[in-house]
Image 1 (cartoon, rainbow, N blue to C red):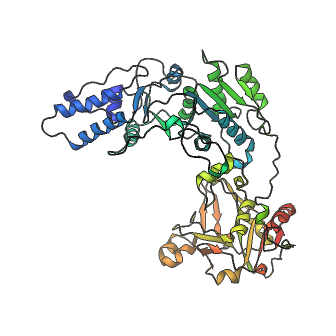
Image 2 (cartoon, rainbow, N blue to C red; image 1 turned 120 degrees about the vertical axis):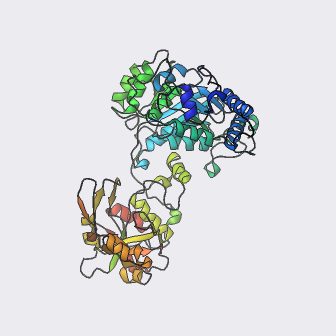
Image 3 (tube, rainbow, N blue to C red; image 1 turned 45 degrees about the vertical axis):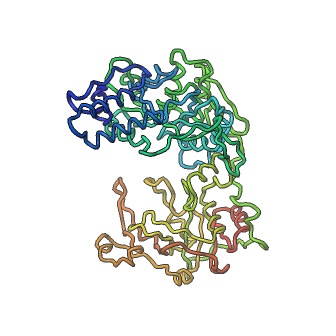
Length: 546
């Protein structure tokens, strides 16, 4: 219901009573004004004018808005602050719901183009993000981000790590947002009955370390701050509808529109962020030195920076974080992880004849490891720790260190956690290497472990049964974890024959603690990686030739 009048919008959102003549009309919009008192009064008036006992839903709604006011919430017309005119021009006339009130401070927006999937390759980006956050003042600065934008989850985590207040803008990516959905999110953010009003921390200090063993300083209160922007209203005045930026995602526009100062960490040519930065620098009355550009080939490269600097942007160069660092990948383990004694031998690849093993390939992990939480994953990236490496080699090292193959139900019909292996000989496994575009990853990368088949069979490993839906329907429950479709088709209609993988499965994790040294081997594609791995492995290593 985009483009609604204020009355229609508030009623559709469930924020204003729709009770005919018993209900007063919504007040006129005043830029930056708070509508919440009027909303509370409207619900109270409905209760007072109702014959008999008002419906329970009306009583509950009125009570919820009273609690919201007690907790300091505000519902403003537009966004209060110096950038209100820009916000209206870029986003249209919207309502803004502030569950914890309108936070003060200088709003600093951290913006970036998309990084891609291999996050650990962007050390320069995380270097400037880390430096930017350590240079902000939690007593004065309010970091601004928005949901569904490139830097959002990293910025929010930095708030916790560095003790910075972070305001997250929540808004639909396009203009077709639903007033009903927005109203539901507003009401869900109101504290429940009986919830105590939070006390502000004394002196603004949090009173405890947010960084734990990382040694970072304790910051100020970092409770989540949110603003929920509504769909646009149909009112007279400036609107983003005809603006040259109206085709860009709303969350990206919102950060630059609401921020007093913007820091661009990475800009791609011809991307959304480049257009937004140009528009921000051209906006009449933009304060001097309010748009900062992290300079470097992997950040804001010279050809893009020149144009933005000429338009009034300020260059920012962080030593050792501008794409000039050493990108060689060290071993993802420390001296304490090394196996005492002689390193494991590097051996030739066994021939395909009489192949007696099953092979489990590792692959790059795009998010947290199976036994790792999201915060640890983000901290490793932000703080440039060794754990940030989620490559296929790092996955293999984790198997060596933990002595375990972790089962997963991903892409298994029925979602039973299993460990998948292949009976294809190691010398021929390169034929299976395939890029799955719908998953954005490679299957059968040249990293992994081969384990004797008889050892795995004694622990319950079995070959899968290839078939179709009729076979799945006929299988007893105990056999279904070992079912695999024999074929499928891609979105483009290409047929994929899964039988060539010769898959075996083991239900649950495979514990390797009692796996003999002569019952397994590891494989990697380079001798340098093999030598690194040999220092930590109890099993021989093979260097796979390409």
